[in-house]
Image (cartoon, rainbow, N blue to C red; front, side):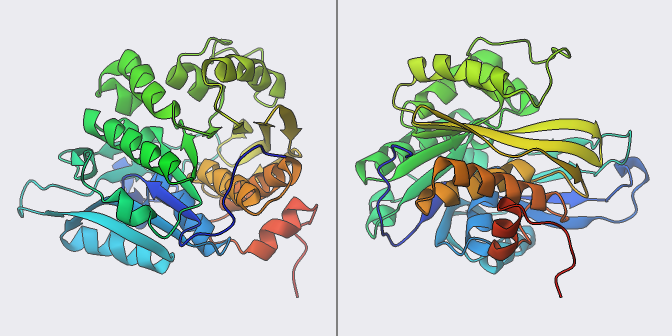
Length: 361
């Protein structure tokens, strides 16, 4: 089995620490020609909590920054709508410069044109979060089964990484399983100290982590692990041996880690991907099926995978079934607009067990 000591009950099944953001999405129109945008509430860590609540019917929460102004109100409404319990550090907006809830700009691309993503994280409230901002003793008092954070939040400032360490330490003391999605973002780390600070900051967090999510590039750049060149075009993106070859090095460096999981994605065009997933769980290698995806919006697929995989482990499924649940939910996520789930648990289980896209009457 997983080798994880997961408590059977708790006031919360899952708690995330991360930044809440809003994503402006002009669809397939590039921003330079856009006249309107959809607004999606997002955040790598929040997405997992939202998915586990809305699709997988678990009791989840988010610890984050919240600015008291209309954009904050919009984001808080969506957090409530997804059934996620908030623990906020509140900030007052000065009406001009902030602090702000970050904006992510991301078109969807189309065909041979790739999606383009850029940010406005100036004076971001979440970057100001620091140790001591949350009462972890009170949050964990009723019992928390699983705690999660990610590399995006760790990259925002020196204090966000310190806060992640503080939360992971409190979680381990409270008997929670801990996970971390490496989610290496070159643009964020470039302005936050570069590659060396990334490895140093992430290592301090991962020392307290039971479950890692991340592909071979995340493992190399986030953990400083040696491996094949991430730009190597001779290796198939669907070859699990590249991922498994790196696990031994990761576990040797971090022997407390009980599971490492990732998606495998071969991008043929913006709207056509070949999709699979693999995991190493307590010494066992498991691989999900491979399928062809017609992609509407690729943003959130990785968080969708993490949600399903974590649900499987929390629910006592075998590693083989947990990886299939993550694979299925991540695949379904690419069929919806936005960053958080619109799938049902019934749909996820049907696809994980070999279901098809035949009409449901």
